[in-house]
Length: 275
Image (cartoon, rainbow, N blue to C red; front, side, top):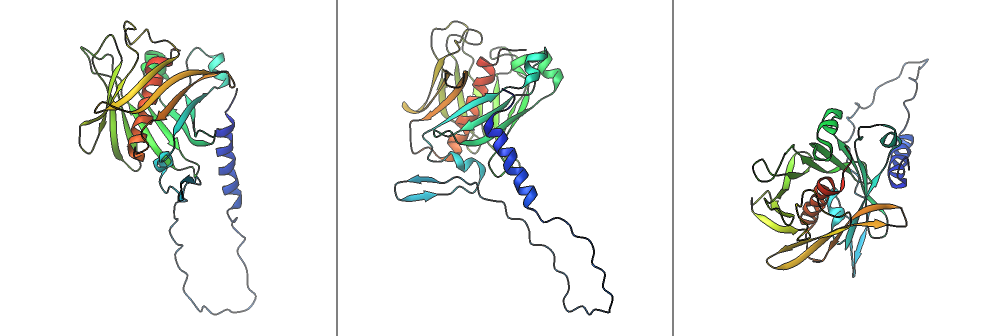
C-alpha cells in the first residue's frame, strides 16, 4: 500500500484550498487621469480555521477550536501505520507515517516522523525522532519528541515529550526501571507529578524484548481504570493497529493527548522491530 486513503484525503483538501485562493491579476493600465479617494488598507490577519469535527454528546454539540481538542468526548482512537514502497526495497527503514482515526473511521490526525537516516540505521526503533500530528485544517496539533536513551536501569530511561505549538509542553511519558513488567508513568508538565501509571502484561520475561505482537496495557490512577491500550491484528486491513480506549469519560482533552503520546512510545519500543 503506497499511501493511506486518509492521508491522501488530507493532501487533497489542501490542494483544494490552494486552488480556491484568488490568483494574482495583471496590473491594470488606465488611459486617463484618476483620483485617489481612499488609502490602501492592510489585509486582515488570517484567522485559523476551526477543526471540522463536531462531537455530539446528549443535547450538546462541541466544535473543537484547537488541535488536541479533537480528542475530547471520543470513546476511542485507533492508530494505523502507512507503508511506503521504499520500505520494501531498501535496507534502512524510512520515516514512519501514521493515521489516527476516530471510532467511525474518520481521520483525525496525519502523523509523520522526522528523523535522520543515520539514526534510523544505527539505532533502529530506538532512534530519536519528532512526530508531527496535523489536523484536518493542516495545522500542527501536537508534537511528540523522543530523545536517544539506551536503557532504563544504568542509563537514561526511555521517555517521550508531548508538546503543542508554538512551544508549550503538556507532559511526558517516562519508563520505570523494571524487568518483569513494562511500567511507565505519564507526567503532567504543569505539576511535574505523575497523573497516570501505564502497566503492560506481567510475567513476560525481559519486557524490552519479549512482548508479543498482540498485547494489552492498562492505564490507571488512584486504583481506578482510566484507559487502556492494545496492539492487535486488524484482519480487514491486513495490518496491526494500536488502539486506545478511554474508560473514563471525564478525561480532559489534555489527558487524552498525553495518553496518545504514550501509545506512540509503546509503538516504537515494542512493535517497531525493523532496522
